Image 1 (spheres, rainbow, N blue to C red):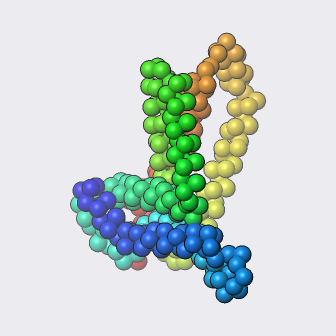
Image 2 (cartoon, one colour):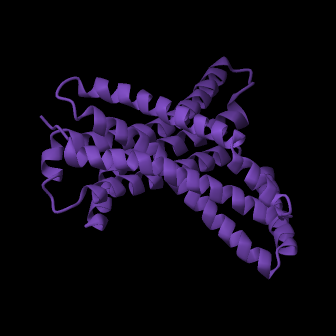
Image 3 (cartoon, rainbow, N blue to C red):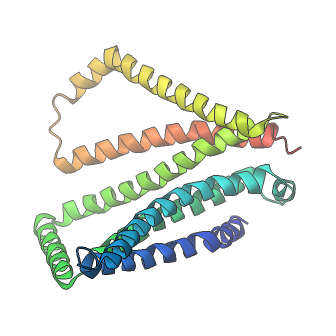
Length: 276
């Protein structure tokens, strides 16, 4: 059933995001033409038109990035907290499946947004010399990597890549869950639900920042901090090991951070959801 929910979410969101991606790529092509031959000419009309194309490209980038976030919030709000919620909550689907379908689809669209923005930027900067330099740069990069990485480091490089992808996915999920939790709490009230949601968003942000800051301060002055320093003094970590330790620490923090918001979201959707 989760697969069907994900398919439904992609259909609903793709009708908006795919045309926006196309508009961004078209404006990138226009900006490229503008940079290559329309700016700094003796014709004032071409200068104005070229400037407008560059501005349109910048606006398109901002619009695509903002819309990916807005659409993520809107789908959760309209699909589960408004009139559609009466239908969605009667389906033979758990609340967890509803949430995970939206988290997965949102993470995919965030990743595609980054890819399309990078592609559009390459289109704007495109010329023969740029392509040659880019190919040469990648060739040198892979040559240095193949020279540096033996079998042991290749395994660690794969692990680091997987950890990085997991960190990016969890980061997207945590960002979504911050909005989901605030909306779920706000819509447990009988009146002024959106106002309560906005208020609870800032309350949750303040609470988590205060808790995280207090925890870091306590650890910094506690016996545990000194114990860890004494324990790791004899370690001689390589660059790979230090990178993995840092990424695992970030992953653990994201898991704990997201677990709190996930619990709040699921609990309020199950126990306190008010669709009236």
